Length: 114
Length: 248
Image 1 (cartoon, rainbow over the protein chains, first blue to last red):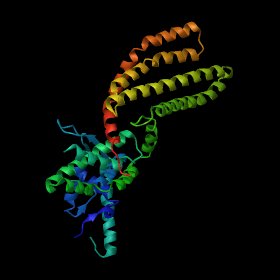
Image 2 (image 1 turned 180 degrees about the horizontal axis):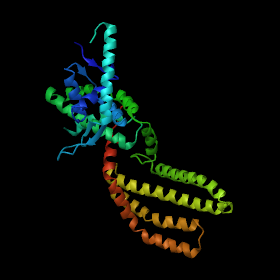
Image 3 (image 1 turned 60 degrees about the horizontal axis):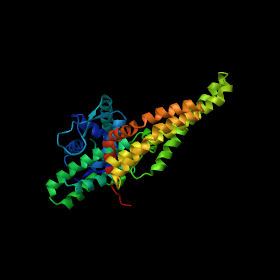
């Protein structure tokens, strides 16, 4: 099966990020790992594109970010860890509902019912 | 990770972040976050591939095209970030002309005062104190000149000392610092002379004010050193990112 990447993910990335954050708070790289693990190796994201999605979610109050405590002797800035807010949880539930309807509708049209 | 590799990773990040119209604070947060991510990708790929060249190539590939990312970042930001970006235009940046910077501050302070005066004038008129408008305008002009010159000299001397100490430096740092310390001695006497002279107070009063300004003068270099020191972290980080040269 071919990999899912780029344009096919557009519009769904934010809901997917909310969904992996439901499992617990995470920093950017961990979010990518969770997404790719959940995608069983078929999901290939340009990792930089995660950040615009995270910033949009943060601006909309769906996720909140805190700086992780800096490990002693570690070079660089402390990482930002994202967690789901209650607004994000509500949005995730709505996103799931919309996705189900989308899959049922398009599935029926293309002849691949879910 | 070697400084050279870190420099390469920073360049990728800077290609994505520099074109974004957002506040300096927001851009610094993006840079640091994405650099941490890139460093982690690089470490992972180095374990897997072994060769430094292949690792950098793969790191770039996984991260995506920085120019495309710059557009996506811009679209992800709230509108007020563009406003804050314009506000940051008034800040000093390494490589800026000092005179241009001081003039920007002067214009900003004068504009702010001008707006305040324009907003106050109708109120004075409505309270039936129209005859005092001349005195009010005189006072407003002196205050505007005072705040403009004071603000321009504060940021000029403080930032310049900060840049010499922690930023882009100067060919002869000790000489430059001594020179700016001497310049700073003029700030308080000049400010008091401007206020007292501008308000056209008696000569005695003006001389008295000037004396107070001269007595306060020796505190100025200490104050500006402290101001520069408080900006140390910011200046170091900002200078490092700004020193990165991008292609094209």
